[in-house]
Image (spheres, rainbow, N blue to C red):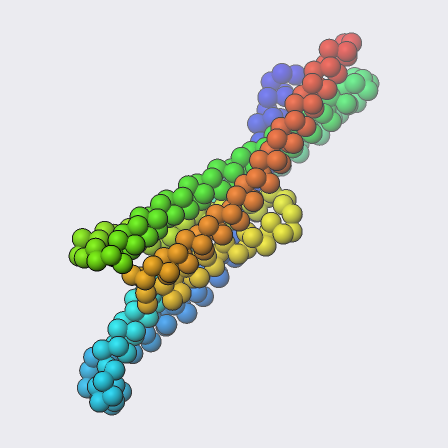
Length: 313
């Protein structure tokens, strides 16, 4: 019977993993479709913005007009900033799409390995149920039901832990972004007192690092959302999760026009803090769920042990 139970336990775990992977794949396919559309839109926008720059740098009537009114350099700077922002948003979306494609490949390979496990589990489960009935023990049926409950709770614990890991990774990235922005703010303040070239280079170094981290965060937020597919959370928490996916767009919109301006850095800090708060809400909710599920699993384990001790064979 021990070998029998070990086989059942393994197949239970595989079946639960298969269901989780199928749910994740469904979410990943939806993300891929959405991102493919966004990449095309951002690509068009990038080309349009660059065309505006090329027009002003060339011998167009538009360039001539701005030269006559004495605002060509101002207009050109603005168009270059918008073109740069458009390129960054396109690159971020492209990296997101690439990351989702990788996750899909891994999940599809995992699903292929788990093929047929549910059918094997159902057959073995039916055989065990028949054996228990043949023995005529009511306690045996209760033990069987308790084992099923424990398998479900164990699966839930694993799902919550995986989601927590993704959320905590995202939190660590937000802290890195805030650290970079804090550094930029410090050098930006020194700029106000005539910090010169050194402070300007240091400030932009921190801002470049913040940009890289934001791109990484966007990928991680998608993975966090994917891991939450099988975890039931409150409706208001779900709204926060859905809002993650537009974080990079809001972060980059309008920022490049005034990277050097202190109040723009402060606005970015506020935005990252708000995103961090949303992630923390979800992570805190997951920790509560994990504690509750762990407790329920331990109580079920005690109940199962009591049933085994009390059962006479």
